[in-house]
Length: 210
Image 1 (cartoon, one colour):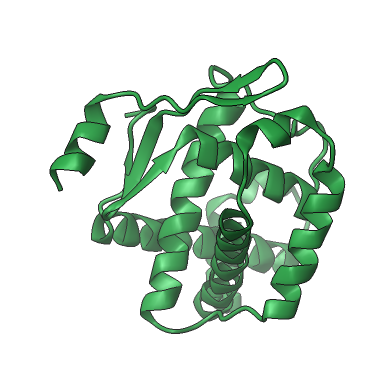
Image 2: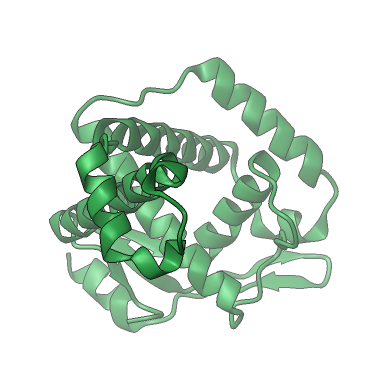
């Protein structure tokens, strides 16, 4: 415990040197007793970008960039969701899926100095990849379980309350769109509440954003 507490207030430097690159690692967050480092955030970001490509999302994050802070939040959330999944023994992941994902990451990053400098062990790559799969599967499970059905009466009430938005068009013209909108809004609120509950449960802390 004393070691963990010391990590909260000190920057831990690892001299991972490859060619001219040096990777500096610092403690950026915590979930329960698990400490998250900036190096782990970089590794997780690479796995995310290769397995779930997004436009204009860089493989290598600058530590002072807004994208890096966003990725810290994502990794902390991923960690806590995976812990909750393991706690309930759900959202298991097959070894074949993990093996295929690892092979894809290794192929994409082969020969890249940035990845080499991170010195990612096979065990780390497997652990972070599996955690990502578990978290995403459990989040999908929770999303399905939280999805509700909006009644015609609820949609009608929203229509009447926001009548100016719809002009002279009748309720029937917007009913299904309103129900879809309200269902999505309800789901987002339920997920947001659930996230806050598990963040408190596992004592999630982001040391960068505060």
